[in-house]
Image 1: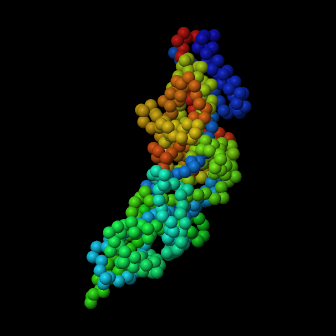
Image 2 (image 1 turned 45 degrees about the vertical axis):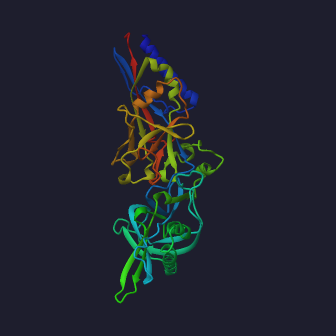
Image 3 (image 1 turned 90 degrees about the vertical axis):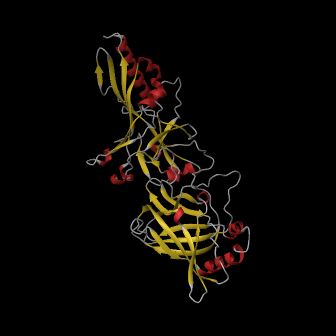
Length: 448
């Protein structure tokens, strides 16, 4: 037997032993699916089972995003996701203000982004409340997070409507005239006659809160934060009345944020919300219906680790991997084929669940997945990622941390504004399990 064949046999025996070591089924390493044996090289194709798990970020940045999310929606494997939004308003212009000006009404203008989760063919009620405490950043705080919230005092108005976010993106509705008159009088008596009127205004109106409740089934809607405004309608008491509109807009995107939380969470995921757990906890797919969860806006992510690669290190000197393909199958019950995102990206994740560097492809760009649709068999739809460069980089190291993983993100970085929810098939699925496929090139310098 040549050295090449002895090496290949040793490699196969080592992998077989590895199967026994982990107590895995024969599907974990399906070695020798394909052999190409020539006088130059020996190539084998191996399918390696991955470890998929779900983890959750303790805090998700929700300010500076430009989107107001309000409402709730349900997702299988997650429970109910809820959101309400807080923001501060700027002082309106007092240019031309005189004692002859009189209050008429106050309205709110909103614009839908087109984003939503749930059924929009139903009535929903938008509620606007007045925040009773200053919205402030403390201790060097730069952002507001999903767990930031503030108490409210008065309900300033409600608006019940059938959303139709694409057909009718703009909505205008009236709110409390008592509040409108009070606001008018404050501006008339304080803002006009005070040099530091902006500070006085912030102390007077701390902020507003938006919340939404659908009448039938859970619904969440997205609004453009830079287009939300309160409009104070007045007139000058002249012989011919002159109508005036003074606008209050969101003063700073850094002070508009969404408070989000989950309820009715499956028992297996509840541990991720326990404060004493720490950010390093990952829930394996076996405990969550053989699937992992990904919804960036709620802080849920799918991690993929490669615990078995370390056992291949002794054999890397005998060859290298020509190609490494990551095949990730979405759970067919968690999506509609036409709504599946066309791609996502991979970033390296350390054992503390902190992102480090992108996963690079052979062109030194960030590795991205390509959606391969199967219209005839929807379950067979999957995402394909070429991770050859990444796998060879890992195997060039002397030691592999089995807790190191990659995390999936819809964009090139984590995106807290994305509430698209998807589940991925883990290694315990009987069919269409996510896997790593390796094409190994074994040097044959001496021939047979």
